[in-house]
Image (cartoon, rainbow over the protein chains, first blue to last red):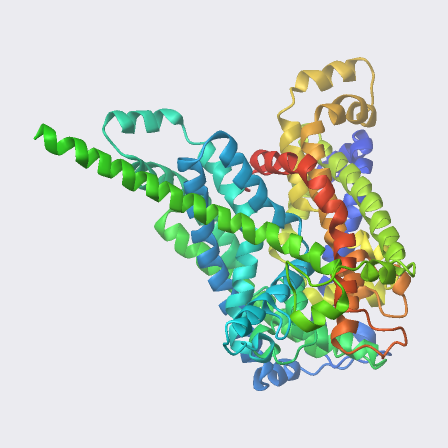
Length: 316
Length: 297
């Protein structure tokens, strides 16, 4: 009886408000196709893929794909690289952008503030490729500004592109450089939401600028900082494919420190299809699933820790 | 006492001033690190290949030349890439903003009972996703979209973040406006198009800017889904990437002559030209957009 009634309500709602549901149809369809339809494909991780079998007809192989990945060298290398790059990026990136936002907010006013802000924001518009080439203009082994300069004063040039150890710092610096202007705006937006009266009161109590920053601005920025930190920690196993790929390309020397899970998957899948053989979907899906699961653990873990410390700042 | 105090505060003053000058210097250096590479790109693209080969990249080339531009503009491949990028950006942005606005509007209406179910449906994929390979497999093998213009547009057409941003904006518009329109007999689509959409211009403009920048600079979809037999579908950035590839792998593989260093930079300058041109006009809207949309939460 009640079930029937509920069914009627459902039907009624869809009929009564049908224009609304038609209006969201395109979005629903696109989400279904590009976000939900791929989900059954996860089982590829447990299969040995064949063209004739497809997703459902290919033979099961249990955990063989995972085993192969974990026993190979790529597993440790890609995971280590992506975690190193992201950790450095989060730590130094956040520190730099918060520091710059505070400096801009505290020291400059009016025109200077605008000028700095606008120029620093420009790299937001640059594609990864542009950034990679800009660094190449400086670092190129034979033509780069740095090596030309070193040679002109009689020193040996540094062979940046022949040695992989330089590249984690370079990519991290490039990432911070590209994102700085954007992040400064995010923090400035948050700072501008702070009530002026708090500062006035602090001034009356004799607090100087430095004290104001450490006792008012930073504590009030804490929720924003924690939230951005959580969001980026949740993505610590996910690299910025385009950014890395723009720097590395097919330079296998740099792959030692810059190969991340995405670039490794890309080579596995696209490399295969270009040679007109079947890409190893099984193995690749296993690696992808490993990445997804790690990401999950990290999100829930970090959120749990934040909940313990400061309940209001947790994401969920 | 009093005598002591004056020089001390002067000293403090000087310290503050030196500190401020140092911070200005820091920011000027930062700005230089952004502007100078652009300048260098332009200068090198107008240098002669010989002077680049001999003396490396330089702000003061030994010899100027427009050879690189003549080489780049001698075939139409860059215009083809431009045409692909323009189509992708225009079609993608218009469609994306339109359907996301529609959805945001519906989700903001109290009378739509299942709006929270729909919102959950849109939010879930940001937490649980199938991952890269099933996504790639679906688009390539199930939907068969490889090597089409659509594959450069469709996968990034909808974004739950943008939809929620729009929904929140619509929620802020007084209900009485919609009710008045309803009394006059306007249907939901009419209300959206004639009443709400014009009122949401600020948020719409922001999203137009971000979405179009995303499409303009995108080469992710092209790297995964466009192969080298379909070079007429290369968007600008991917075209640029392939050019570099050709250059660093000593060329010769595909028959056409490998581009020179200056030609590559000339191409790069041609691709970033429009962005540099529009930047002064649009950057304040981007900044405002970040301030308005702000941080999630």
